[in-house]
Amino acid sequence: MNLITINNLTHSFSEEPLFENISVDINKGDKIGLIGPNGAGKSTLLKIILGQLQSTEGKVSTTPDISIGYVPQMLAFNRIGTINDVILEDYLRIQQNMNMLEEQMANTKDLDKVLADYQKCQDKFEALGGWEAQDRALSLLRRLGMENDLDTDISVLSGGEQSLLYFVKALLYQPDLLILDEPGNHLDFIGLAWLEQFLRGYPGAVLVISHNRYLLEKVTDELWHIERGQFNHWKGKYSQYRIQLLQSQLQQKKAIDHLDKSIHETTSEVKQLQARASSSYNPPVGVLKLLNTAKVKLKQLQEERNKLNIHQESAIKINLQGQKHRSDIALKVQEYSFCYSDKTIFKDINFEVFSSERVALIGANGSGKSTLIREILDKGDWENSLIRLNPSTKLGYIGQDIKFDTEDGTIEEEVRTWGSLSQSQAFNVMAPYQFDYQEMNKSIKLLSGGERQRLQLAKLSYLETNFLILDEPTNHLDIKSREILEDCLKDYPGTLFIVSHDRYFLDRVIERVLFIEEEKIHSFYGSFTDFFRKRYQQLPHMGNRLHNRRRTNTEDKTFQDQSWETKITQWEVEKEDLQREIDSLTLKNKFTEALAMTNRLSKLQKKLDIAYSQWDHEL
Image 1 (cartoon, rainbow, N blue to C red):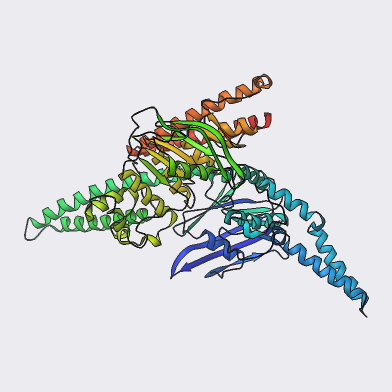
Image 2 (cartoon, rainbow, N blue to C red; image 1 turned 90 degrees about the vertical axis):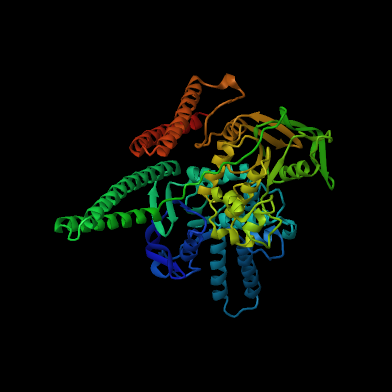
């Protein structure tokens, strides 16, 4: 069943097209991921679909009586009342109408009309599942990690918790089409896991904007990609799409490499013909003809090269400088307790973080992750026996809300506060982080989340820290920026201590998990996916190498389970080796060989998808 048809949709901003000629359908049961860099036009497209914005050209047609649930990324929350008032607002309105009609029944002269109106309200109330709505609302809140009762005043809730109320409200109605803009921003990893499961089995259509690659892989089977005004439609899983995109980029690089060689050869030919033509007063007609032909060819080649340049992604490789500690232990927390008001957050916790180790700190929302980070930053010291930092530690921190000392100044002014730097030296510091010379005069207040992230990384690299504490570092970053950050952190020589709900990011970066539960901290060696499978007996389809896997109840483990685990481990190692080989061949401009490798990578990914699915089923 077709729900929405988009036909030749174009939208321009300041006479420049944000996107052009989009023609696509949304059908019942579709699970669509809308992806692209920040500022590409994703949220604008959603607003046009929702009728909140008029497109420059084209048309959006919706099926009559279609119900749409929408949860925006940012909510202007200025209401008063309880959780019940917000979530069950529409149900309460219908009930109020029913109560009013009941009162009219005793005094009306047109009882038939009042009864008919009452019946309509009752039918609508029952169609929306009104009698069970309160129980469903409470169940949804619990699954998303909120323990508050429905009569809790919303004024005591955090911004993230208030946003979750609108999310629950949208899910409650089970609309034909559910539209979500970055739905995982305020969920902990348990809430995210539940959300993935819920959306995957949702009977209606789902259109989700997300930079969460794990969620995209688990939930969607169709992708809309907007970038530089171009719209691409892909049917299939996210992992296969990334391989196809890699193949496309390699083909483009191969074409650019071929054009560069042709331009070099043609330029040499033009110079030789010009030298022959200028060597005599009346050059031969044949030489002039050849020269003219060569110039035309050179112009055509350069125009073709410029077109490819427009669509080529900037190659960014951040080298995050750092140092190693001079001893084995970077951080030691011993018999540490923390209480807030009358609530105990931690009680006699003990753990160590070793030098150059990569550790994730995870736990449910409200478990104390940010509190512990704040305590380490404020109280960590070699002389503090409860929170002891290595005396050689040079601590760096990236928080969820990145602020700079020179918020009212420019990028250049901020950079020059880091040391005795000239204007040109400040630019040289920032150039690897994709800031050009003109952007050095850009006001820090105008920087996006991704730009702030890059500026902070540049600062930490310049100061050569050896212990980085990162609190939700992928928030506000698009997929490309997340990949850059991951590559940067993988090569960082110092110690990493990370709070994040981005499981794809964690799997690529960390090697140990510290898990907060019931006022204690527990340690698990391995990736986040390893931890999650053991702790919750679930097998997400995406994940990296299964090194250091530990399991409980091994006596119940079948031979077939062991077989799948062995195959997955082997194939994940092979996948990483292939990806490294592709990177190496690309750097050497051996694009034909790299493309051949991506075909092998695609086949291997399909085998992994099947293996993960089988193992998940057997667990």
